[in-house]
Image 1 (cartoon, rainbow, N blue to C red):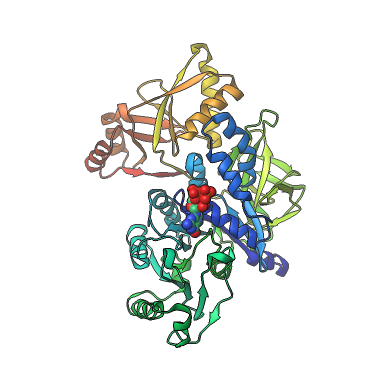
Image 2 (spheres, rainbow, N blue to C red; image 1 turned 90 degrees about the horizontal axis):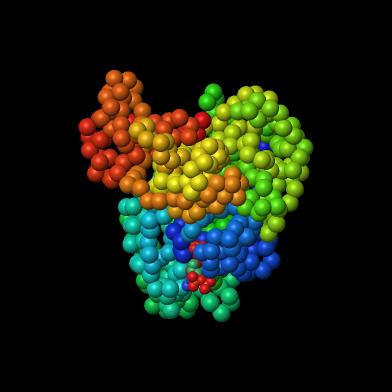
Length: 528
Ligand code: G4P
């Protein structure tokens, strides 16, 4: 291991934001990029989102795609750290990609709207984080508005997300009466003032929360703050870095993203606490980020919707070694060497060619469909990274062909799109339907559009009576055969040849699980 390489790895922080739409992810991202100097002007990320959000028209969305690819990974430097922020698309863009991005990060930032507490999408995304015990920092947002009692928000997080909360800052009042935050580990008061465009003011340092000068700044809120801090000391959890790194405890910060209040405090702690790139498992061994030989794994493929650029971008997370422009790497599944001459690294505003990159960084590789999700690239040893799963879809549609003569093209198109990870394809055992499964319903529109554009197939989709899917396996072959017989009409084979049970409703799934305790019903499946 070279010292220079270790220095580069140790500088890196690769994370994603976990939130429900409208909690403030875009606003917070923008502030983070401002601190990182990646953008100069507030409003740039926001206007991008507004353009995308304002229209549900597919063609317009398509034009926006170019931009949303660019912003899939935002890299910036902050206080000597190289920070990679991976976008976890929400809203209409919500898809399996959103989940998979979380398999490529080393930590997460959970954003909660203080008036709403834990919401549905947050729960789902946290489930994915839990698969890998991803460390999570929490930012409770919108304290400038009346919200829930901070203790209740933390109780909500603890109960629903099953993670212990350790507040590192504490809010003083809220809404119109929001006075600021008390930094628990530094004994510092940060006064809120919307007039300053919220830029966090220099913290006033007190060695002791009982300092009578607090009254000067906070009036009656000083006494309330003391009471609450005492309560926290008695009943709360002290911050424990080890527990944070194990994904058991989350340090909590309070603030207001739109007012840029509490953001820098959180960012400072984040780069300090968040883990450096981790070792990653392969089918044969763990690969350390400090190993000198290069290795990387593809976790997302984004098709370019622009007709003039029919290529796809494979997003590769570097797992070890150093990447240099033009480097030759082995594409193991295909058994070919390729030279990565045109790798792209994603900055907030535009794409720039990469000259070098290290473990934790994400590079984009242009290709015409030869790369698929889960593919491993290395310079030497043959490896296959694991831990990039398929997630059980939540929406299902049956594909109908407008022109029956195009059946072959339809099959080819669907198989390739499924291989790329754009959608999941299921072929029922008992009929010749094509069933699509997706995590977000926008994926169906994308598929129909791409079938037309790329495969010249006119297809449409219609609802079908499936509500959930589970991948099926069992050590007991006899039980498996019996299960297959019994549920034949609900079984299907997915694009990688794996057996899946497509449940018409949750009760039928439950009864199948009760009837066959020796069968494993999985919500995720490792991509081969
Ligand atoms: P998202 O990406 O998680 O979906 O959330 P986004 O940042 O777009 O924020 C959602 C809404 O919440 C926006 O208002 C945004 O201005 C507002 N917001 C974000 N942070 C704060 C905060 O700290 N305090 C308050 N009071 N509001 C906040 P909008 O009305 O939907 O959009 P806009 O008209 O402001 O653009």
